[in-house]
Image 1: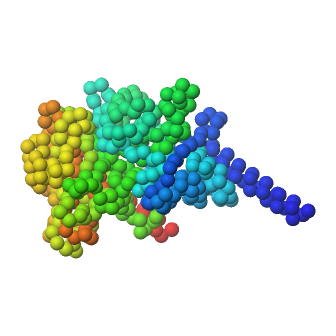
Image 2: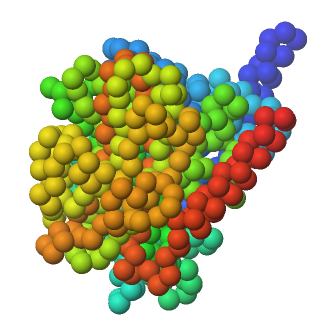
Length: 492
């Protein structure tokens, strides 16, 4: 009797502990008095790769990941992902219950067959990694944001992958403030405009965008007052950081890649198809701390040189040129723009054979029109009639010219540092789309290069644009601050 009673009390204590954990954690995930929950209904089978789930409400991004195998069922993938979430402190903060948590019971509670049920608001969770199965939609692309001073409005433009979404979620937050906005939009749209509130002083902000694939038709959800995003599979995030009083767009968010490709970007190739193995996510400080994203300080420097994640581009097949590209949409004809890119030749000093790595930019039309692979490879004329490897080239590297494994900034325009192979970009009449692309040609199968993103400044709209030397000084200072923090973390 004593043994049975002890076993019964242990079971009750475990159950009470799980309830306590969930209700203590729920204090940060509530609508009024009700608990906010997100259901993600996976379907089908997994592919061979990684499955990443992240939680993003502010500048920092917390996430966990698992490795998946081909034909693994959605039920098994969900069970393993739930266990990874329960045993990690990245998404649920267990410190509030003193660390005494039955994590296996937590995992069992959030894995409901092929559906993952998590505490938190719909639209805060996203999916990334090299996983392409389980019904996960592709992420939105080319998120662009520009500010119109005359009427105080921000204009968003982006590209939705065809047939992937039932709705999108847009969210924005003004820098150094808890003010912002956002909502779910069925359709989905590919443009949105909002006005800056009069009580917001600064014009800098962050914008996040993601798509959703619902289990139920959107029309039925709206008819039954079911919130959009509450029972849907989310995509990865596209994000942009807007600075310089709304006139500079830069890619400084730390967001895990989807399919090995940096958010907002798309791979291209002159071959019969894109070699997926030719692109992957890199982490500058992965050797220092695998969980570096879990506790980045709120003061994490914002800059291209201080980004942790970067795009790796590996050598293409023999005779092929490839890379990645993105478009900036809705630009103003007649305005002058400066593009800054952050690149690295990694270990190409020791590469054998011939190779070339370059960054390019050129107006490509209107209404989101881009360039073909032949145009980006330099074998077909650009819309501005320029043709050849040098067309639109901002900076180039090859044997004898490298970044010596460091990351370096390259600028358009006549300046003493970082590229300057083409002048600043003036958008021609009738054109509002700028295509930026990275190109890599390499005969060494082990060759690889990297870049961490770009920023685009509307020099015409800016009152006093910073000089490249000033930008480089600020970026270097931000990188030093991050390195000092990483060093302290490694010593703990």
